[in-house]
Length: 197
Image 1 (cartoon, rainbow, N blue to C red):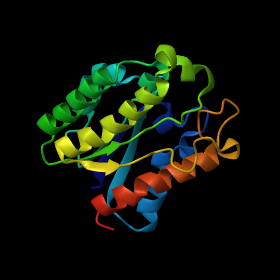
Image 2: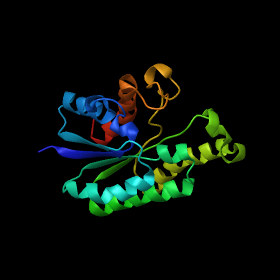
Image 3: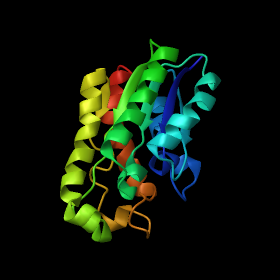
Image 4: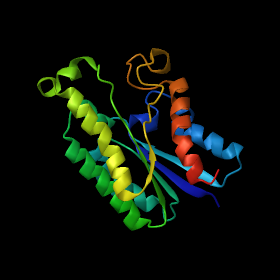
């Protein structure tokens, strides 16, 4: 019986406007299968979800997994795009990590880091030009949470994809199928070790 990996995230996990087979959790399943590992990836990404939305959704998702071996948390991008307070995002992600640990103390938790470039157009004027400061705080919250909770950490999900027009949909924000392959590689660098490869 395969062991369960739950990917809990937003549009980056869901594979916005792409077939499910193109989203990075499916690409990771391909890597798992190629290595003959006994794991099943479950994609619970919801486009547009904030960390607060994930906090509210979690109690409806966790009961579906009586057995859970790995929990991959990818949320916060929509918080950042909306300029929500970093403290709120951090508190919501902490709540999710705590609840997963409470329900499945043996499960390995993986936190996925996010960050923004400093040239997001209109966003650069956020808070009277304080966006650079906000972006630094936003980036830092993920590593701080990972260190505090001693969980496995993917430093930057969009490494090599953000700002690359040919790897994103026309909106310039969501990765296309090729971009999702790179996201899978970025996550696999950490997740592969968690799974013992």
